[in-house]
Length: 131
Image 1 (cartoon, rainbow, N blue to C red):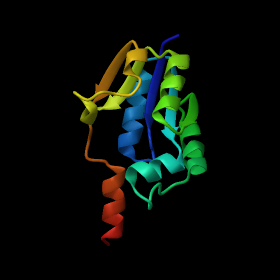
Image 2: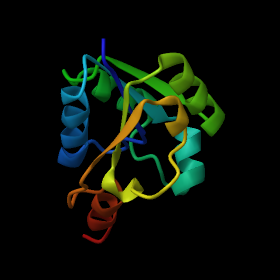
Image 3: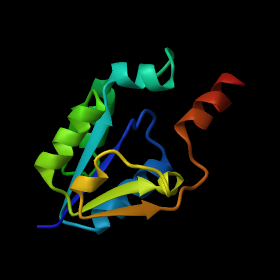
């Protein structure tokens, strides 16, 4: 079985997320998506985030056909532990991570990158706020 992992906030699901998820699933048999807790997102992105709660994000992602499992993490150490236990063949990241250290990359056989498109949760929230 070829195992694939993707991690992120997945705060407001948009076509860019679906493209990433579908690409990740095309690489293997089992796709694990790991998302940040609400508290972690608030620390990383500001007190007004996340827009959707952890429960809502897990519920939405769990109902996307390409995703086999969703887990939640609250620290880099917790993410690393999930990756070490899962032992993925591939980790998939957006191309904005090219050339950067990726948490847990040393526990994956290979990191694959998908070219980012124009979709961004932060941009979506800013567009909505500016209306």
